Length: 170
Image (tube, rainbow, N blue to C red; front, side, top):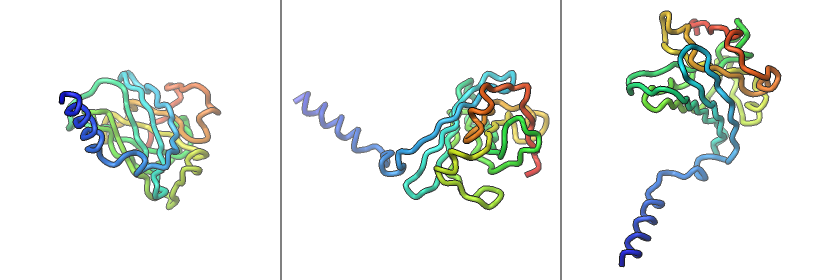
């Protein structure tokens, strides 16, 4: 009888899960490293997954000290390299939650009017930055940054000394 109850509990557990990855995603995924960019001890990953409707879901998962649920860190996808002082913002991403250090955004149209496909993302010349705050002096503190798409290999190693601050004028 115990074994039957155990089997039923396991089956109920599997059956109660929300939509599976198979139902939402095509199985295509890209991962890009986000590097520590300040005195704050954070690093992370920027992941791109293709949804079955052709849209892209981007996820930022940071590793570091968690804070309260009310704390958020603004995140942006930019064109060009993190070293380019004139790199325009491509799109604002969902802020990273301080509680779980996670951000998920379904990319829509970028600020220049384009929409990226999964294949476009492989060759996208861009970078990601996560800021400490939305405004003020802490806006200039970049927690993590990293190149994505086509320029990842061309720079080799991340150098925080070469990073530029993005303009808050968006």
